[in-house]
Length: 103
Image: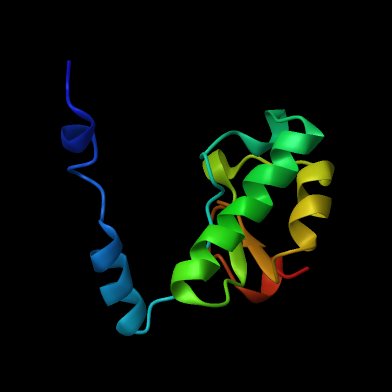
């Protein structure tokens, strides 16, 4: 069995993410547990969306955006995400405009 440390070897560590932020890159949310948000219960959906923002903001300051894991969302997901986030992103063909996904 692989160790937990080896499973994380291909992911960025916190220091690397801080370096990106210092370099001017936006740090945004992608949910807490990377679940298909449209399949979660209301309580789990609310938790995943809000807890992710709180965790990121404790390290990086204000977080404005959320990218839906797997591009999966529905009206319920959009409604809950509109509370804590200024904008959301989801995959579409063509140009992904920040302005087109604002709440």
